[in-house]
Image (tube, rainbow, N blue to C red; front, side, top):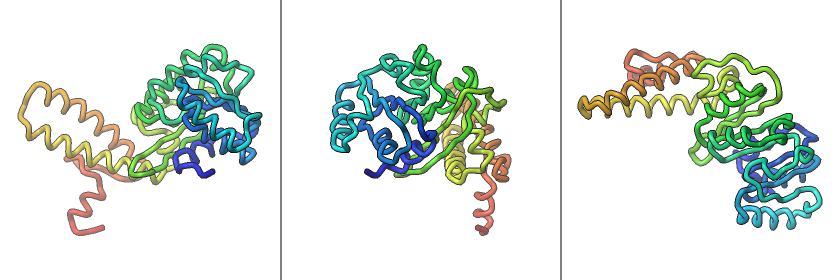
Amino acid sequence: MELSKRLTAVAALVTAGSFIADIGTDHGYVPIYLMKHGRIRGAVAADVNQGPLERARMNIVQEGLEGSIKLRLSDGLKNIGEEETDVMVAAGMGGGLIARILEEGGETAEALKECILQPQSEVWKVREYLAGHGWAVTAEDMVEEDHKFYPMIKAVRGLPEYYEEYEYIYGKKLLEMKHPVLKKFLLRERGIQEDIRHRLMSSGKSSAAELRLLQLEDEMNQTKRALECYGIMCDEKGRAEHDMQRDNGND
C-alpha cells in the first residue's frame, strides 16, 4: 500500500517500536503502513464517526492486520485507554481541534510520550498549546502535494524552546533548517499579502478596510521576519528580494 506524500511524511516522524493512536484515522492508512513496515508494535485506529471506521476495518482486514490494529469509535482520546498507546497521531484536522483533543484527553493524553501532528489550519494554535503544556517540538517537516502545503510536527515531553510570534506561525525548526518547501510557501504568502494590500488600498478608506490593513501589516511583518531566516529581505513596499531582482531583469 502506497501513502500520499503528506501521510508518508507523517509516518516518517513516528518513533520505531511505538504503540500509536491514530486519531481521525479515516481509511486507517497510517497505522496499516507502519505495521506492514515493522515500524510500530500496535495501533488503535480511532474516529468519531462510524463510516470512516468501517472503511478502515475493510482495509485492515484486507491487509491481514486485525490482530495488530484495534478499531475504536472515539471522540479524540476519550475512549482510548492510557495503556493502549504512547504516541498520538493526528493528521488532517484543524489546529484548534488538535489542541482540544489533547486538552480533553485526560489520563491518556497525560501518559503520551510523543505526538505526531499535521494540522490543516491554525498551525500556530498547536505550537502554542504544546509550548504551554510541557511539550517540546523536536522535529518538523513540510511537504507540497497537489498545490497545497502541509506542515507537520513531532513533539515529546520536555521543556519547550522560546518562540517568537513568527516562529509559532511558521515553525521554529523549519526556519532553522531553512526548509525549501517552507521557503516556497513564504514567498507565495508574501505575494498573496501584497495583492490583498493593493486591493484594500484601492477600495477606499472604509473603517473595515483600515482595520484589515492594520491586521495585514502585522501578518506581513511576521512573514518578512520568516523570510529573513532565508536571507531574503523585503523592501518598504513589501516585495521580497527575488521579486525586485526579477523586476530589474535579473533572475
